[in-house]
Image (cartoon, rainbow, N blue to C red; front, side, top):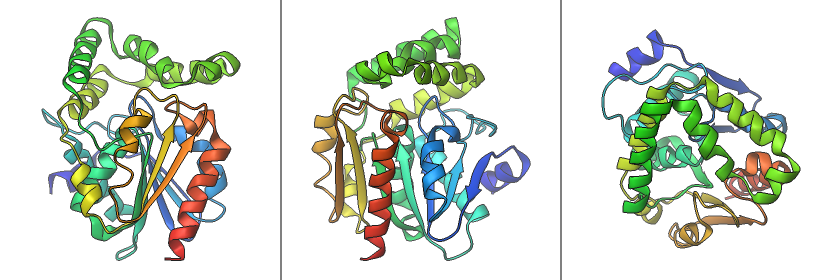
Length: 270
């Protein structure tokens, strides 16, 4: 009931256009729904595309409470989907980075609402102890310097070296959008990611098709980490994008569009 009230009493911002099979795209940390614009432009001609701003991003209200978890975001997503998707109609859920963590938590609890799901530059592994320390320092840095200063330092690390040279204006545009985030939202995300548990069991037990998209230069969701997971589902679609880091939506949009389109078309034939 609390989540239902949250959906109806607070701001929810989302994109919804097209007809046919429903694809829900979840953005990652330090992003909003607009990160998927290149994918929306293509996919909306064939499918119904629903792209929410996660709580605390874009124009969506924060989740209320202390120690918000990845599971809390998954529960919020379930209520949101019930709010916008007709009853009994299943979705394909694709999550980028933090959105992938939420996707895995959602697949564990609400698999009956899914046709398939996918991880776009994301991982089922929990944070290492080293990574947890990095997140703790980030949370402290946000307390001292604010969310924008933190994102300004971290966002460039999500792109390949070549992309930062040849298309730095796109990197700068994403950094500039970091001004829209509150310190509370970024800290809430950081704590949720830091405290999440390993989710490989979800990949092992699912009977759903699972998409994996990896970048050869990704340091946030390293190729070698994700390669250890992509054999776990019974039905995996594995794509490695060369010369791309963590942001194929911007770094290689046509390649990602083709990957998603092939995945959706192929599972239609299963």
